[in-house]
Length: 151
Image 1 (cartoon, one colour):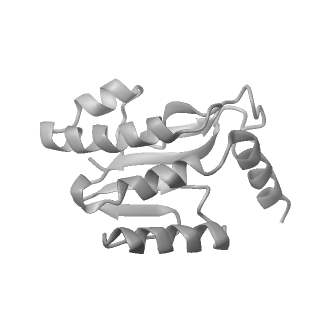
Image 2 (cartoon, rainbow, N blue to C red; image 1 turned 180 degrees about the vertical axis):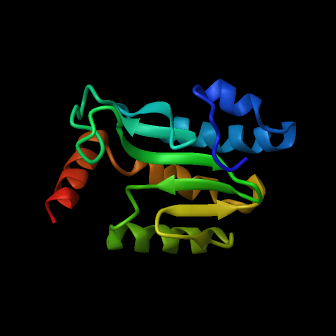
């Protein structure tokens, strides 16, 4: 699966093979267990998203009142799983912390700007991903997002 047309998380999960679904559900549970209050789970950009509700930030992403600001994402790509951590993206201190903690885990980090990729759930440092998810309360993330838009 590259970009799902699913409109609900259940529909997204139902489209996955049983093995892939089991891995996605394990990562999803880590995210849900660590997600600070105030974010909501949504379908966004063809994947499971964790976003600032429009009720908290009505202007939305890039001033589009129909698109909530994305905090994190989880996707089953063709050859790997991806976790998108927008609170790490563009934040040198947070990224350095994340890379250091991931290295301590002994797991190999395959990371783009905000995207952590792994083939199987066993390859991921789920505890570190959980810590990254828990790291930024919603009001702080809104402030970070607003500052990034002023540059």
